Length: 169
Image 1 (cartoon, one colour):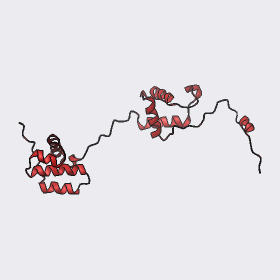
Image 2 (tube, one colour; image 1 turned 180 degrees about the horizontal axis):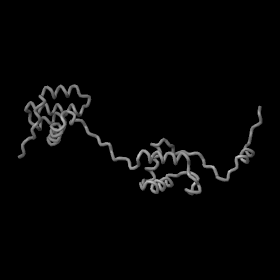
Image 3 (cartoon, rainbow, N blue to C red; image 1 turned 180 degrees about the vertical axis):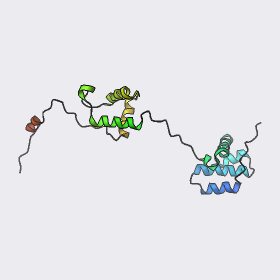
Image 4 (cartoon, rainbow, N blue to C red; image 1 turned 120 degrees about the vertical axis):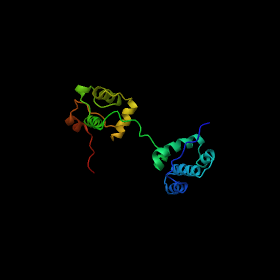
């Protein structure tokens, strides 16, 4: 049978309890109280039960405590994967969406997600799903609702003549 992992000796049980009382993180407090029970000589199974964990989990927290001290008992959340496009590339996409497509170059009169997907693959070599393009646009501050595109051959003078106006009262 393996022996118990020894706990670092620079913290007393009273100090661990004091740290648990002053901590704003409930999970860290539970873990500190379990470790204080271990320092007091309590059975590891019973000490783990105090913190609401099993003996193996307590052992893992002892390793983290020995390595990082009380700060090692905080939950460590991952920041997630790094973005595939840099901030400059995202700014370039935002500028591209803001100016709109050039019909002669891009072959469309307004951007759709599938069109932007092709442009991103061509320019940056990053392939996104269409849904991810929508999420990217939302983070850049764009809405899924867009103005109706104007036909390139549209004449503004003809539009003004065609408008119906009400007679003044």
